[in-house]
Image (tube, helix red, strand yellow):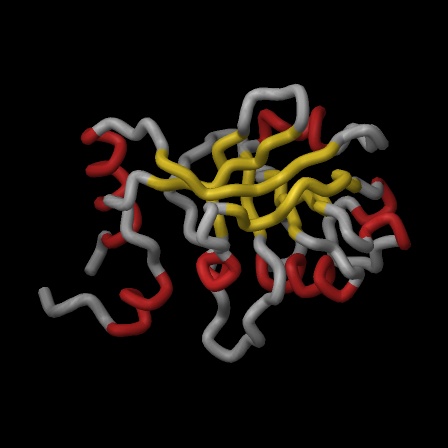
Amino acid sequence: MGPVPKWMKKKLKSPFSGEADFLEIDGMDAIEAVGADWSDALLRKDGTLCPRAPVVFEANNANGMGTWGPAARGAVVVAIRGVGNFEELTANAAAAGALAIVIVDNEEGWKNDYVMTQTENGACPRIPAVLVSRQHTDVMCSGRQDFVAAISRRATKLTTKDIANNMVSAYWPF
């Protein structure tokens, strides 16, 4: 077993950090999310990744691989995971003028140890991206016009066991 390759050190967040990204929708409990590695460069000193903005889901672009309409400009757009990769979805959202993208997972089981990374040859996305569990599909994909949300990074309440499980998931096999 050798050392961890440099590209892995650069790409993977420390599972010991005890921090996570949160989607904060006005009037609801904060939703813990998995943040993309490129979001690190967009983090403000106060922990903000995206200021409060309208939430936009367009059913005709549910997978995020098409073009968003004018409502996406200055908004947090929502897409369902499954067709394009995280980086492509984020690039499409940025091209529409979105401030951030929330990707709703399409898988039944949820783990907070997913890794959303930039590809080796891809251009660094210019907006933050987070992945939330499938259980939030009804809320995030409702098309409601009155949702306002922000994305921030803050301390989590992970237990020592949770952090150890994340360590094994993120770095195994070496």
